[in-house]
Length: 360
Image (cartoon, rainbow, N blue to C red; front, side, top):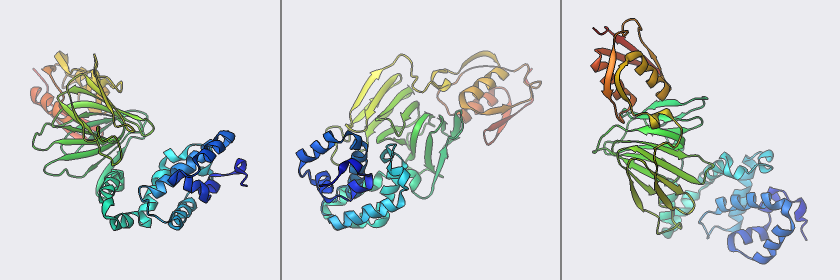
């Protein structure tokens, strides 16, 4: 009889009876009793179960010997300290395990099974975009917000720890980005080239609007709120999930919010008084100016977008702005402002340099 009280994660992974319970539900009453009688092992059991499910996936025909081999390969790649303590199966180590399985031939095995072709498509579509070649990734590792200017001129304000990945040039018929974390978007209007955001299995489609998304890796829910324009959201279809929800599309208008549950694929909508989700200045600023000194306008843009604007204070001392700006990306706002006050600007990284001849 095994002494389960002293089992480590590796021991659970190597136990054939435990594997049969995880994969086929054999002796379920016995294993439920083991879990109940060994409360100190619950974390190890859950870690081992999650990893075994990741190894096997949907390949019910995978031989036990192959499962054991792949478990061994993964364990050799994971430091022992990662197999203890914190729930690493929700961290990058599980992602690493999934990528290792890809290298070990999961894709080849899937192709051997005709009925698994759809599973392959789902598997490949689910890979993180930052793992695909030809993409740029911006990771905000600062303690403040970070502005990202996309190839089409759209603006994205990343909160701390957020990541966004996108191609160096968008396709002619669509613009696609992937988000992890929290961000505010101002999308350039282009009905012929819709803009897609993939965030935590939620797909957002817009043609030009502003909205906020909260899609943290550790959160079960993904949230989105619309500031301006119209947004279409849908769940990224996953085989075996709630079929009634898979592919369901919702249309959201300003001041409407959706909460999407990654597990159930359910989407709940509500109307909010203010489209504030991330407590960012950009969410609540209406960009209305009436005879506002230009220096104050630039200070407001600096605060909202986390950029630095350099200008000659003496040259613009008599310049004011009366305008109502909307959901335009920051560079379009600067274009409009400079056109009004007869100025021009250059962008150098996160710094904008303004050149003005002054105002009468």
